Image (cartoon, rainbow, N blue to C red; front, side):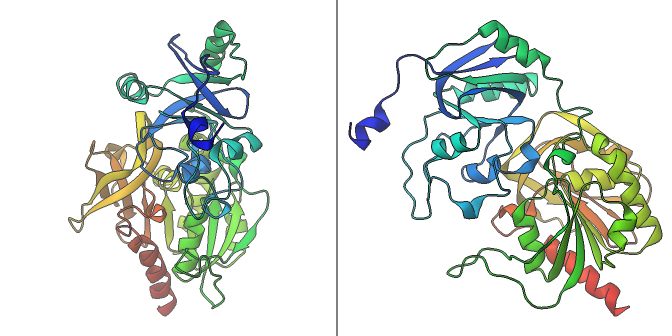
Length: 392
């Protein structure tokens, strides 16, 4: 069969099934690994970046529905991984992934997923599924792929219902690094690609709650000498590196659960030092918790590369990339903590800072090239705060 004919061929019998906890079933065609998994189902509205999304540690415990139909069309390549292997439990797409057509592609999406034990399902009405998620909240689901199309539906629905959800779940420990390491790779640039930082820079300790590689690249490109520590590092271990600044990374799960060990560390650093602190996503939420605010679970979260955020201090509107299912309750921010950014979609909190200190964080992902450069200034702000502190 020719490649063109093969791309148009689909089996007559469904080879994958997505079962929601309420008993709703979606049948489609499986790709990637065979087997089954259960997770929370979310949707992402980005038109590009499916490989980066699947390898983003913040998606641990989730299956991603892609609203953009052309998934797989650029293949995959090692340079675009945000971590070593896919972390999202599975993917749901409108059309079966096509043969890739991109000069950077080294592998087809389906083969890449199969090698890494992740399940995909195609042929799904993703518009209907997305509407259901928006209206009813992120459901618990089970996803199965069987080449013969044999499914135990009762067992799948039971598996979806047995999933406990992300509230109260600490997943940072599952995706963090096992030991500390140095990072010197900088952002990709044409035509060299990734280059290495060799000049001296601000000593930054980055707490890895599920850090994306491109965040570390942005820190290096902004003039930082980066040392990455595991999520469970104590304040004593952080300060033993004599850092000029501390970075709190993104990550998965419930910030209140991860905060049981991370919040005391953050508070001790804030109490004992005047170090600049910068947080992104989960790091933003845990900084807020350390300052006395609350976090809450959202109905379906924010996942996409087209989210408008307003900087309340400058009036500037940024197009941002987001991926979070929890948010900081802005009504709980204590005195002395300033709300700096809000979502123009729903008014939810997207940034804070301490009024009289170089301590700040944002809910969105400035490293993901939304805009595409709207938010990179945040890394420069962090570097400038360290320079100002060094200058006295």
